Image: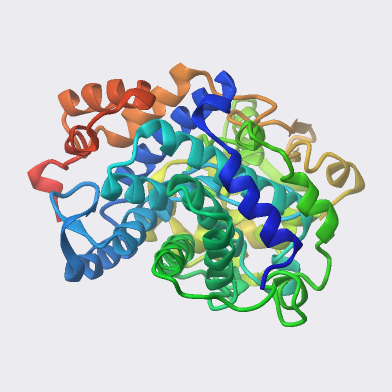
Length: 465
């Protein structure tokens, strides 16, 4: 029933072991787990996260997986959904940009939940995470989902199945069936990120991962999946990718790979916004230091690359965002807010800030955005944005940033990762919990009891919901 890609992924899933990973990969997996736990805590209290948790509580299960932040254990697929939604809510978890964009750490919630429920060692979990990242990165390099109207979270489904198969020591046959059971029945549409953006944006990847976990469980129980999920004439390559996936090339990418390095190509976020705005924020803040007041600006011109324009500026809603989810994906709003406020934080996307008339007027009258050959040439190696200000006194000021802080070309230090961890968790757990939790995560490969780690993230009573 398999095709070449399915067989290649199934063989790849069998081959990766903790002992085969390089030291930099192990270190980076640990850094991403730290970052992901921090993102989960900071995204816990918002509407989509609350709804996902409320649903998960209907599926409480003794010996299940934890809804992190609480003392509840639920069925593993619902823990995946609840935890994954909180991780993604603020758009603060990591990113990879290529032919297709992705938030690869969306695979961590499902793999962690499976490892906790099955009491699988943290070393095996690290290998599974590295395995899943490799799949996500390689598929993003190979073909675009969004250009054909499908959402990037479909690649999270594939990556989670392969990482989960590695974690659970599946046979190649089980992995092949799980891939078919995940891919064909669960196709996510790009409408999630088109026009005005809703709270579902935060849950889309969590749902894709939940579908992957469900498919793994089905395959484990003997369910058989559809024929040729990638290469069939109604399969993923035809339906979602317009036959742009080079089947032989993709299959070969996974042959005899036992030490995946894909995670080293991905990026950590400095601000809780869509990644392609990170360089624009840095450029805007550099310009902010050179001016006295935003009122002194006559015109703002942004040069960017095509993908950034298509995702962050093409839709009219991005020029007058009314929801947080639209605003944190709005290049014009984010740049103008940075120039006016001298910073970007969670309050930047509050209803009060989104309704400031002066900002909305400036977006209509002062700002232009252009896709240029120079910026296109700088992507995907970098994430280039140039901002030029024409001042009322005649001065012209310009800043360009290609590799923002956290990019693989300008990576965060361990200290910067940990500073982000403390900043994102400080309002939700105690200082003692922060220190103990971070110490456990620093030594993630030596965990003998997931419960001890999870207890470090039980939220303070006054914010527990």
